[in-house]
Image (cartoon, rainbow, N blue to C red; front, side, top):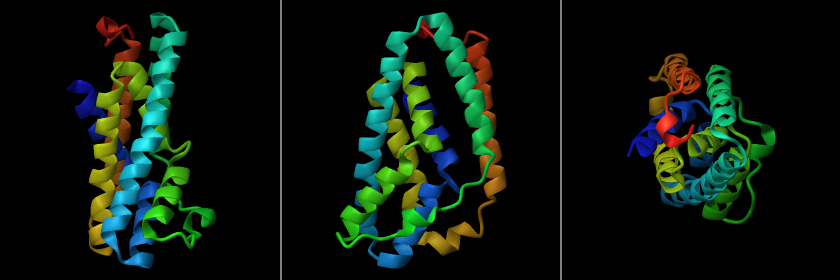
Length: 191
């Protein structure tokens, strides 16, 4: 349950102001059909984060617990710093295909999420918690918590949320996980 809750919280906070959330705003404004956009985000996130969690589990199998602890601790600290860097939507992410709302969203989200901080966080969380299903469910829920309101309420929400505060809270959580991991928290989990 801890893996699910931590994964949900971290990704929901890290996703606010992220380029994939900006992409959700763009898709909602362009297509004005929220249901297929939300469905596309959901399918793309599950596929992307399942892949990332599998990588995290694989990395765990390659490293001993002591090396893994240092790698994960450093990764969480790097994620804390990365979270403080604001995202911009790349021009290639806004090019909308002619494949319909659902498929356009699925492809755009899957590609935009590749190498994104929430995907990297999913790799680290899967390595940390050894629970691929709990992590993927949590990170997917976190993505949906951040992006569904962006699709449905976009402009109304964007101006009322302090991105700096949200990014600061997410960075603090990543930093706390990094320090805790470096200090040996999770030793019972093999990290």
